[in-house]
Image: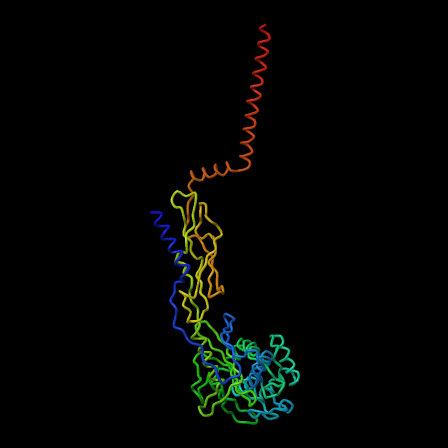
Length: 437
């Protein structure tokens, strides 16, 4: 019976080293990316780049500059969002490109300026925010570049607040990802850049008007084919030299992805903006193509370990100490792509054994990469037999150096005693013969 149990346990051990207890889910192929200069898709929770195209190639940043403008300005002005400010001539100096038409002497709120910059890419709003945050455009640009260095954006240089083309102003999508992650941490910025429209309040110089979000991943006002239900905020824009840029975030099922696309082309014939299309496709790929898989089942025994000093059992089953859920592509076949190996700390255990005792580790691999490790623990308590324990103590004592030294000493003393006793008897015998004569 015991041989049968051991055979069954050994069978489980082999099978569980090959299988990880779940069925693979349907795979999602990576999208075909075309018509963009550079792109990157990043999973926040696992800090992994899921897709990258020319991620370290320098490109013109265009409207992605406004991510840095927004973060630096917001952290300086977040307690003043409801404050009414007055636009000055200096704030509007040198502003070109898209504007909402702010005028000298116009009064509006800080919050409205953020909405105008984030939803429509308003360059005059960006410049006003820069002045409010740092006192001047020059001081604000200095802060933008200082913070870029702090974030490790080594290939980025900012020369204006809105992203208008300047030959020396460059970045990379891997650098832009770093500021996009900071933007995503600011819930208010993400909230503002996610709305489909904003009614800009009337000012002392202008009537109210409506701003529509031009990031069509989150808005369906003018275009619906790029819309993605799990997408949130950030920004979109373009320049002739850079092409279009799109940065967005998508969250679902406890997973968050940030996507940056720069250098998008436009196909007029098909009315396709490749930056928007690529961002939408990559975010879908992240959400639908990856997830967590349970690769360790705590209810399944892994193998057995011999146990001594017990009269009831001669082994104890080992189990994973906890389950393990791993972030993997959805096309991974766990039965064939995931392998498990065990490392035991002991060859055997001596009773008593307490359930839950850690006796080794179970390592999990995807290809050649280790993706997790859990403890191997004993599955039951095992009582010690007193008689077997006593015999073991005697056996161990008999193997000890002290016992051996004592035994050797006893033998030596016994031999000496025999020799001495014999010598004494011989001497006494000679004396007895002498006295007889």
